[in-house]
Length: 104
Image 1 (tube, rainbow, N blue to C red):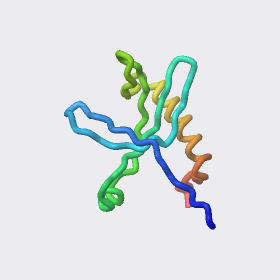
Image 2 (cartoon, rainbow, N blue to C red):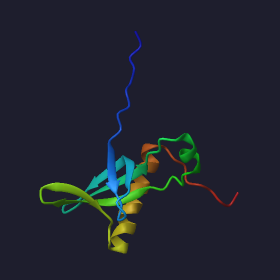
Image 3 (cartoon, rainbow, N blue to C red):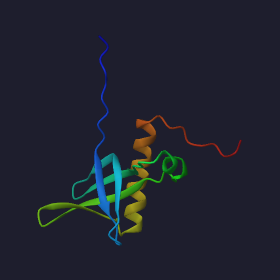
Image 4 (cartoon, one colour):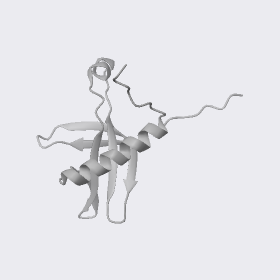
């Protein structure tokens, strides 16, 4: 009998400033000495949204507030760039993504 590998993504729902809920899959997580960050990919119910989506990776900081974990934007632009670069490198390795050569 063939063994079937089951894919169980980590899914989170985030509420934006307008109260609208958005669903994301956690693509990766980084933990430093004093903080935790997650890289999220939008989850779409409609196949048309998948095709029209921009495929943007959302990077947020995991904070603890009143005993609950919340996701918040990284306010410091330099820190955001540093964390985004780490995620980009890790995801390129994980998914064996080749950098685009735009000079062709």
